[in-house]
Image (cartoon, rainbow, N blue to C red; front, side):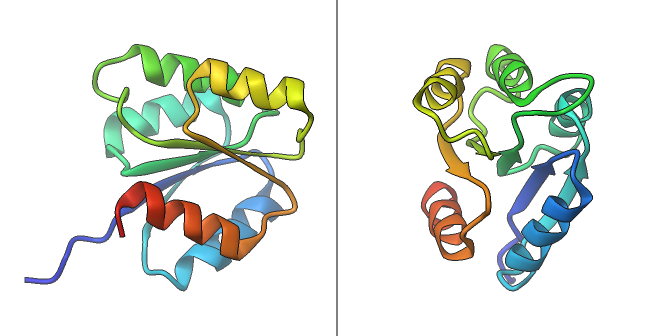
Length: 125
């Protein structure tokens, strides 16, 4: 029986960024689930049980730091690796990301090789 595809939740309010992430990840045959803000991310994480979450920081409704902290506070989603994907590369934002519970941090524009390398690491591939 073939291995089950790993499921990745992509969270970003930018259709362009989501399209780029999908182009990078489609080559690696992951199952992709999409959310456009932090509230949707929490709902989809609970419904879909992804293996990993890629989360933008600056979004309407609820930002990535707040959504990440919420996901970490709930038993069902606490162990899911969350990688922040953001234009905010300054030390203060990176510290805030880790403080909110993210597993890792990638800055935009996304480097496809870096992203795939981090995913393989967190997904144990």
